[in-house]
Amino acid sequence: MVDHDRLFKELLSTFFIEFIDLFFPQVITYLDENYIKFLDKEIFTDVTEGDKYETDLIAQVKFKNQPSFFLIHIEAQSSSQTNFNRRMFSYFARLHEKFALPIYPIVIFSYDYPQKAAENKYKVEFSDFKVLDFNYRVVQLNQLNWRDFINQPNPVASALMAKMKIADQDRAKVKAQCLRLLVTLKLNPARMQLISGFIDTYLTLNPLEENIFRSELDSFLPQEQEDVMEIVTSWMKQGIEQGIEQGIEQGIMREKNLVIRLIERKLGIIEPEVKTQIQELEIEKIEALGEAIFEFSDVEDLRSWLNK
Image (cartoon, rainbow, N blue to C red; front, top):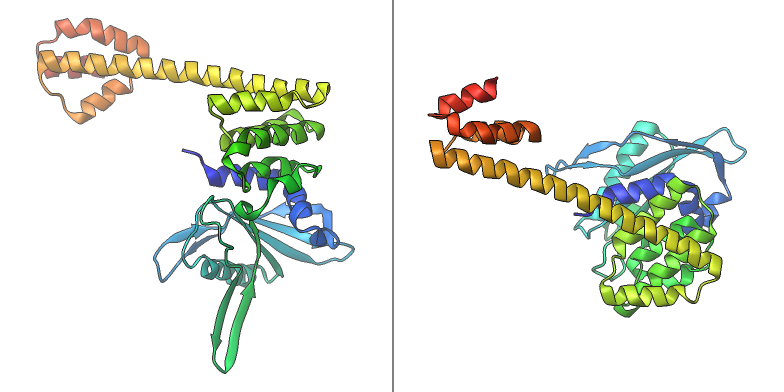
């Protein structure tokens, strides 16, 4: 399963200024880029629903040329939720109460469906009186056209194009363009890996799309082709290593389960805690246990061996 929250939090915290600059350039005009302090996440309980929620990203930032601060609160939502606008207001109210600072609230919606425009406000009003009109900024990726971002010299654009509105027949082309943009940015290896991993997670291609992807690379400049293929090669190497590790783990688990079945065939059904104790053994001890099975007369012999 993809950990959407972790991926987006890593991206937004690593490229915080780049995200703000890409989608809210007006904020950059009054934001001191030299002062950013990420605060600990805040956990809130929804009294009406009984659920606990935690904020995604809270940055304390400074007004440019002023000795005063404000907060930028960013929520990354990977699914559409009822009454989310009310939750955003609850976050705002409690953060404002705790820190007594102005708050700039932003939501980035990364789900594929629905594609209708998400709400960006929470109201409380009567026919004769408006009590509350709370607004927040929204970046809804499935309403953005990836073509509008292919020439943006911004690492966040390179990553988030992979989650924008993409026709099925364009998936391979978009992946190629994401990587083309990425290699032109000349980031350090760690940042390059973060974004390339983000792209590959959300644009995993089937064999037919892989052929289209490689055809797209042929249209790139020679140096761009070389740099993109270096990323693709690193993905392949990583995939092989992960496959080997998973194969080894699966093989060990199969061997443990086989030993358990042999024990139960000889001694009868054993208790769950004994099975757990066996499954926690290192592979060398599993092999030794497999040889010792034939010396056991009852479960007590097994327990005695395990306790040693």
